[in-house]
Amino acid sequence: MERSLDIQLTVHGIKLEEAYEGKLFAVRKCKVISSGKSVPDCVHINYKVSRESDPSVCEQQYINREIPRAVDLFTQCLSLLLRRPSHLINYKAKLDGVAVEPKLQQHAPRLYNLARMFNRGVLIPSGLSTCLSRDSWGLFESIISSYCQNQGDVGRRLALALRWFKKGSDELDSSDRLVAFWISFNALYADLPNGEQKSIENYICNNMDSEMAQHYANVNKNSLETLSQLPTEKLPILLRRGNQEITKCLAALLKANTQNYIEIVKKTALAIYAIRNNLFHGSYDPVSEDAQKHVAPAEDLLSSLVRELIVKKMTGKPLTVTIVSSEHFEL
Image (cartoon, rainbow, N blue to C red; front, side, top):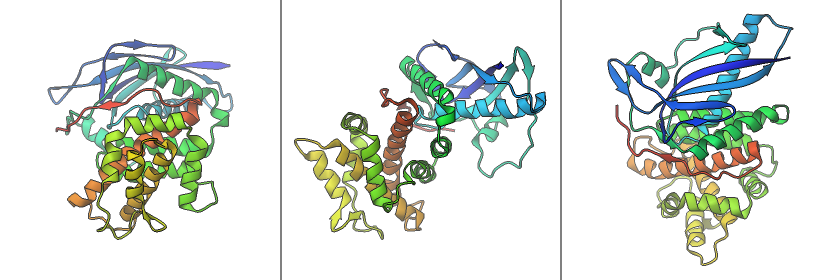
């Protein structure tokens, strides 16, 4: 027997072009006040989903399990369409038309928790929002529907990749985002037993066609140019593959009359891998300007790559919308 969940979420960090109503959810702008100030770019989402009943557990145990799962899946899938952090301000839920509330164990707050600070009125961020079009919301419905319909076939690695992508999306610092996005990517390609670099290349070849790679290259043209021009002589761990500097190979591929888009994506991933190595092995000063010149474009390109790969895995189709974010951050 199926049971009906109706979850109403208030989310900050989304610019809404127009109200949206689909099969799974409806979205509209809403007004939120924090510390006497109006918080921009907030939306109210009414999310309806069915869940199988489970007579083996009591009602409260069922509520404690199913509602957080539904909310987590919703926010994780939403992160695939965002280029900046979003914040779930609050949510309310009904099970079969009756208001319910999960009773969960309270954990000590983390050292860094933007959502908790937001709810205490300590922080009112602006300029962190992503603009989502009607097509984006349609894609979002497709992602969630595909995941729910094929949940039994969703591998542990894809679930991990999605969770780590959400974590990366929630971070503000480029280094923190790069680490989380790389773990997400690693969860996807890790089963290939050919060594790290070869596994990365093989995964891209097996999961991207030329059209998908061309879309990635076109959407990220400016960041690819930035990455290809990075000075590498000061890096302790050079961006090399054999005797060739990867960034120079990437620059040559980008300038070629006939572009090999799969090779562009492969070289991009290997360049990001080298930057990841420098970061992981303590070669970067996290506050230095030189480090940020490497990490910022790497993080931007990696998030875009992993987003496309996860969406393809979940829906069987390439990403067809362009994600647009605001350009500044203020408190």
